[in-house]
Every structure is written in structure tokens, then in C-alpha cells.
Length: 136
Image: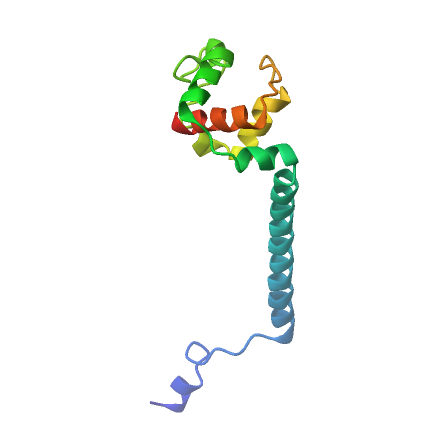
């Protein structure tokens, strides 16, 4: 090889200058800080919601499918249909794939999405209802 081929910039790229290095470090640092903040927010929301005694008790109870189905038919089927396929209310088929267990509990108990009424089942009834919703 000739000396010109060895000195060619395409074969021996020069190292990035110090300004480029600083920008790379700043970018990595900013991305890391953002990721840590997002993870802390998500972890904090989950911790706050699970620390709700009602939600905690529901999630630690064993739900009974048949009882959950009865509760659904008595309280929910008018709007959501006997099989949860939706009538006036939305289709609930595979709802547990779209919403977390905590979100489902909050949805049932909050009444924040009219015309759905606020529903305050005891913890065992809510666990039973969740079991049925998970089966849809």
C-alpha cells in the first residue's frame, strides 16, 4: 500500500472532537434522566394504587367465576350484554388485555364514565366480578 492510502481519511477517520464528545455525553445523560423519571412515575402510580386498602384487598382475594357472572348479569348485563359483547355500554370481551386489574376496579367503582353508575361492591364481590371479567 502507498502512503496516501494509509493517510486517507476514509480509512483512518479522525476521532470526534471534544465538542462532539460533550454533546454525546449530554444526550446520554439526558436520556438516562428521562428514563429514570418515567420509571419512578410508573412505579409511584402503581404503588399508590396498590396501597389503596380496597384495591389491595380485592387483588389479594380469590375471585369466584360463577358468583362474578351472577353479579355481572345482575348489575352490568343491561348495558354490556350477557356475554359482555356490548349494548349501550362498550364491548368488554378481552377487557383484561386492554386494562389492568387496578384500572378495572377503578372503572367499576368510580362512576367517572357516565352513563355507567358508581358501583361499590364489597371486596369479595369485586374480586368475583374481576374473575368473570378476566374470563371474557
